[in-house]
Image 1 (cartoon, rainbow, N blue to C red):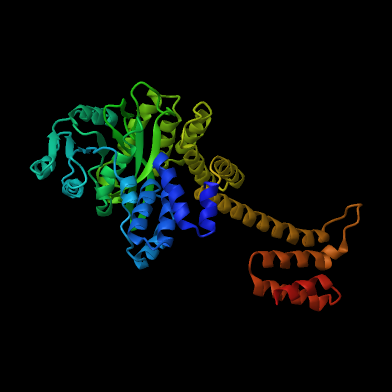
Image 2 (image 1 turned 120 degrees about the vertical axis):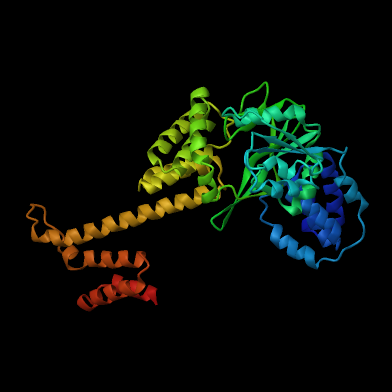
Amino acid sequence: MNEAIRLAMQEGQYAKAEKLLLEQLAVNPLSAQGWVQLGEVLLQQNCGDAARLAFDRGWLLDPMAQWVPSVQQLLAKAPVGPARPEIQRLLAPKRSVTVAAAIMTRNEARCIERCVFSLLHAVDEILIIDSSSTDGTVQLVAHLPKVKVITSAAQNDDFAAKRNQALPHLNSDWVLWVDADEWLFEEDVQAVRQVAEMFDSRGQVVLNICQVNYVQGKVKPDFGIPRMFPLGRGLHYYGRVHEQVVPEDGEMYETSVMRRPVRIRLHHDGYEPNIVQSRSKINRNLRLLEMMVAEDPSNPGWFLYYGRESLAAGDREKAKMLLLEAERLVSSKPSFGRHADILMLLGKIYLSESKYEEAIEVCSHALKLQPNYPDASYHLARAQMKQAAELLQKAERNLVGAKVSFQTYRGIVAADESIKEWRADLALADLTAISGKNAAARAKYESLLARYPELTAVRERLARME
């Protein structure tokens, strides 16, 4: 945060903070933090409507923001406030931008109407790229406004090639790719053109949308889906499956391309088990990914996706082999952005194999890459807990063994008789307490104290339990 802005906000000089923030955002309008701070100072000045606009822009640029629910509650109570034309001017696009939606289909009669209807007011054209559907998919939507259809598009085991076939048929400035089993959030209809206008002056840009997956009653958002980019700037798709947007004259992990997440949310029910099974998605993906690792063997991304799909198919050993190869290849691709994905999948495999040291190692590595990555912290804790529980069990066995071994020990070095008498029992009581079994631990301490009233250490432990 700019120090002058921070001080102005801290001292309650909200008009001054607003002026500084407007100057900052005029130079860097893609600063999510700047928009959120502007919302805060506007809210403090009882300008509820203007604050709402600023917060919405901040959320648009930071779709994973955790402040949204609490701010929405504050905005609901805030006065409307005076009109703020300077905020409207700052938000206004430099030029009008057109957006196309492109949808690949093959026998999508179940969901194609839902998808298209959700997009009608969000985009300027909708292109259906159909691969010889036989269930009436095309007939369901071909008559709708803004819709045009390419029929008999060649699939050839290559989703990127199919997408790229569509690009010359699009007449808009930008394209948003939507799967037929997705549908746009009604609240994000206006956001589609807004984000295109916001990023239009930035050259080669790839925007990640949020796919909100519904799987067996659970909601699983994925903010890393590359789906939106400007046309005519040398970008296209690459990869037979899990295809990525890349420069036509560059490599897959080209760092000159701006990649940003935005708040365009798509509902998605295509991962429901009955749908996945009926469409044989996993087997298809495994077959195509096997081809990709053969064709592009130095790319860690294909090994990551192949390993992930293999794990979903239940082949843990193959998944581990593929993910370890992905991990090896990452060192030659420093701009590869999904290294933490590889490590987390390996961590889950190691946990399932009770290999806690290995799980701790990969989770710790992930935290070095992304220190605030919640999944890495969580799975690291799980591995540490499992390891601790295993160590406690071993400790208990050793303590019991220490007592029993007095019956057979005949060594020259004298054994400590207090181990047999009370030390082992005290340690066993401590283990019980560590395990959270306070009532059982108290009983053990009291039994020990009844036998050895002089043991102050036991009295102290009991006192701490009060």
